[in-house]
Structures are given as C-alpha cells and as structure tokens.
Length: 235
Image (cartoon, rainbow, N blue to C red; front, side, top):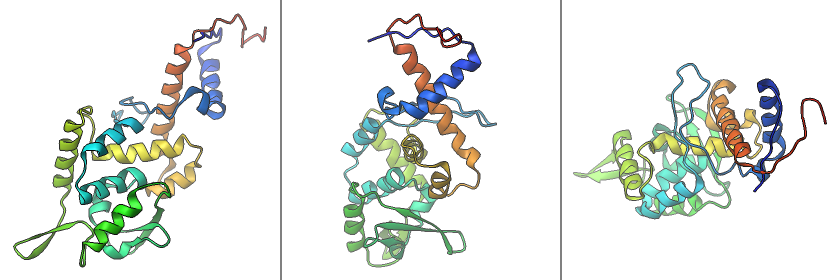
C-alpha cells in the first residue's frame, strides 16, 4: 500500500480525479461498484447500486426459472420493471440475440442486445418454450392467463434479497442502476447508454458519473505511498 499526498486546491483535485477516472479505471478497480451516494440531480435522492458480487449473491437464491429470467433482463439489459412484464413472446429474437421494447401504443421504442456471455439467452429459451402465447411473463389462474404485476415483482425482489442478506435498499431499480453504471464505467459512450436505457436526456446519466468520481476519491484516500511531489507547482 502507498499513500499519495497531493498539495493542490479543491478545483485542481477535482481535475486530478477526473483524469484518473479517464485513464486509470482498471488500476483503481472502479468496477467494485459504490452504493447509496447522493446524486447531483435536483431531487438529491439516494440510490443503491449493487456490486457484481451482490448481484451474483442475489441469483444464488433466485432459482425459479421465470423469476430468474425476469431479473436477468433487468440486470443484463437494463429494462424497467414495467418494460419487462409487458414483453411479449414475439419481442424476443434469440437468433440475433436482441430484445425489442415497445411504447404504450405498441410501437417500436428501442432494441437492446443480449450479452453474449450471459445466461439470459438460455433462460429466455426455456421460458419461451414453456409459454404458449401472449405475455412472456404470466401465470394461469382459473383457466385465465394473468400477466405479472409490478407489486409481485417487487415482493419477489425483497424476498430473494433478504435470503441473500443484501441491504434493505436493494430494489427492482437496483438492477437497472447496476447495468447503467457498468456501461458508463466500461467506456461505453453516454449517447449509446442513453439509447440503451431509453432515457430522453443525457443529464439522467450524470448520477453515474458522480458515483464514479466519489468512488475514485475514496480510492485515492486509501493510497498510502508518500510523495513530496507538488502537482500545483510541478516539483
């Protein structure tokens, strides 16, 4: 371990952090995701972004095939809960490995690729084979096909998170946050992330940039190498 002492003003320090973010992501291991940091958005809300280990822990206990497929769509494709439960069988293209999201009028909204190294492709195949028609996620009740409800999905999320001993802040939105943060911190252009998430304004992505910078600040504080180098004066 080494400590780095930086003799610079706050503005200069922010610039150093941003340069580190651009050039040293692998060295500082930013992929160990942060959680619950305030955003720079107007509402100042806090969000919870699970780490990769926490996502893996969740799926250790989420063994129901349909539930597992549903939550994988949110963590691996960044879908919203309502987008996931509104998927129809014909919205899944296993040949091109893509998911089609439609708007409220049933028209094409966006297309999202299924990660090649994800188990999602296999899960989708298993669910589709077991589904006769209509919604991808539904159940038969009194000879009627009932679509999954957002309340039920939230309840399942809380159940699996509790069994996995994850923080109480873990919610259905956490999977989408995980997806967005992962893309932003693996050098995917913001314009592409915006399209994949289906958000209207790039400002909605600022939260993930803020979280990355906060994470880097914590990493810098952990360094223990002593240096007398003055970044401000260059000596």
